[in-house]
Length: 130
View: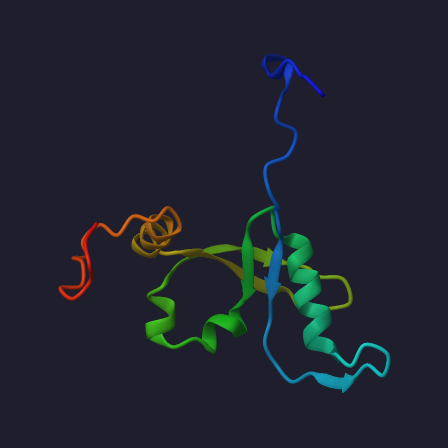
């Protein structure tokens, strides 16, 4: 049996740390003959990848065009902060990008549901109680 002294162990990595970049527009797509999955190509995909390269770990970075395509109701779900204006490889103009963060109230609601907490809700009157 393996026995380890956990007092000497240090955390090296905690979960996935994704960098996300979003852009909108028309894309070319086709079905990959081997996998049967859709494959996307085009300027939009390249820009999204370049935007992602500017993001930090755990950051969702979006172009101004993405914000322009979101409804006011969609925007209420996020905190939006200007991240900066970037020169992207293969793009002649500078691209203004923003950081999207889930709004604090939604973060708390998701955190509570992930941990089984249903604070602020009452049990169904027809449900059997243990």
